[in-house]
Amino acid sequence: DILGKHDGKDYAKFTSDTYFIDEEEIKKHNGEDSSTRQKWHEELQIVALERKLSEYEKARVEVYPHIKNVTIEIDGVTFKSICKRCELLLEGFEMKHCVGEYHKKIEWREYVVFSLKKDDFRATLGLDVIQGDFKINQCYGKHNCVVSQEILRVVEKFVEQLNQKKSLVLN
Image (tube, rainbow, N blue to C red; front, side):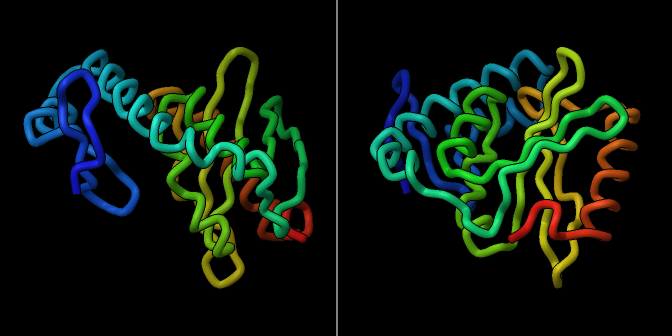
């Protein structure tokens, strides 16, 4: 399905979660340097934002009632739960990635998202909820940059704590 045009390029739905520009752009995204990937993600974000503007009014008031609004700090890393749809959209826009596409999985109680911060570094943590347990799906910085091993160790510690006491984040 062609969703529209941006800067003269067609944007097509490729999977349920990802929107690609065209085959040439997909090849560039998969094979070129990080600056090309950043530009690709910025273009993708513009298309996603344009598509979501019509949904914004609904998103402003739409909450995920099963997720508590919490901020938890572990070893200098702050984890803030995303418990409103507008927060999810904003996280994707600010971080230049597609986390906003996980709305339905969150609504279906299959996914939970956290915004992470340590000093000036930010990342987004996505957790699958499988048979009541949290499993790390992804943890990326801006433009889907890989996070440090230090951050990953703290993320693993955080997820372990959540699995021991799910009521920290779930209603």
